[in-house]
Length: 463
Image 1 (cartoon, rainbow, N blue to C red):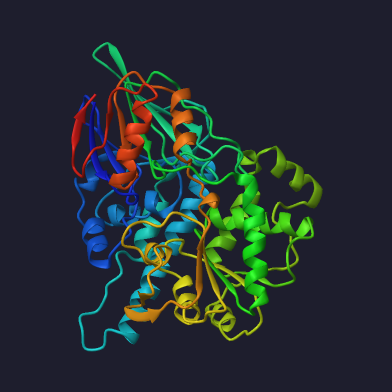
Image 2 (spheres, helix red, strand yellow):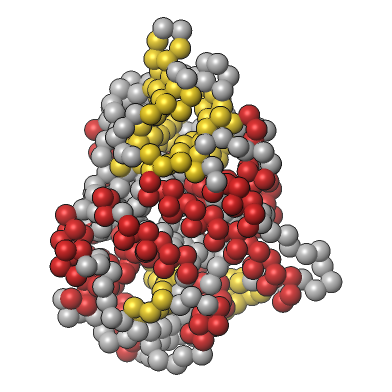
């Protein structure tokens, strides 16, 4: 068995790892969209490391776009194999891939009409029909059950507790009278996170483990402090007559925020203000959440039994149409607007930032990891001017980051998780910027992990 690292190597986005079996068959672990500077992202997403027709199977850890979002590009160029994920991942992936294609088409049109007159036009990475080709390949499988991917190659999903349907992946190859196991954490979640069950360990003793290290250099604030921090931000912004604009991943982060706002409301700690979920994708994802209570933890199940929904709050308004979204910018009263994308690289959030960044009464609330070279990262880093739709914008709004809402395990949480399912061979660190990967390598080595490696783009390894 050979490993080829071609995505999320020394960066946090574009997850793509290639497994080559002893028989020379190719399996992909994830097929994510690289997000960053437009030219670099275009180059990385269109330059495929192998011919898609050679791939015999794709295994998805979860449905975030940086783990599934380049499937349509591969499908457009000949990918025809099954794409496996959990049942919830398959439902979410279909939703996200359709939305990704739609947003790319709309954003290209917007940029070309408003900013590119007389210049070469921006072309969408892929079209809706390419997304449909990829969706037709999706296959669902339950947690904790081995199934055959290819003759002599089987796999198993374990609940990763990151987002709905997220999984760590164990892959076992039997060849030449012996068995080799590879484990991939995907994105590991946090213990005691809202809604979802805690991450469960994948089978121990793998010959090689591939682990994320997104927050490899830090721990998050305790989860129990988040509601009070959120309450303070809301009241502070309302007092100055502003709005809270929240870039949030449509899957996972939006639902966590809705759940947190519901809990504040039930405790009498939510100010009277409307909450707009300005993302048809997030609304669709919330509907998928309601179809998969098998992923809920005990507290979410109790809320479901009591209210019939874990997101029940009269103040929530979901916008569907573009006209409804645009109308939000004409409102003057304080409100909360939750919109995708989480790293501010596409979607409706860009329009709200275009209109809201210059108003000092507003708050831009960052609630997730922001990759290098994204607009979200520039805002989180405190830049006073940023480019939105290619145009300079002054940042006069208050920008606040709440890392505690992250669905990724922090340094200590991830180390404790890996200790529960320790492998027998090397540990590869991916899905982390290089300084964070180096910090986690040092941290985990102090806990007895002797062989820890940080692969570079295109690096190969033989199991």
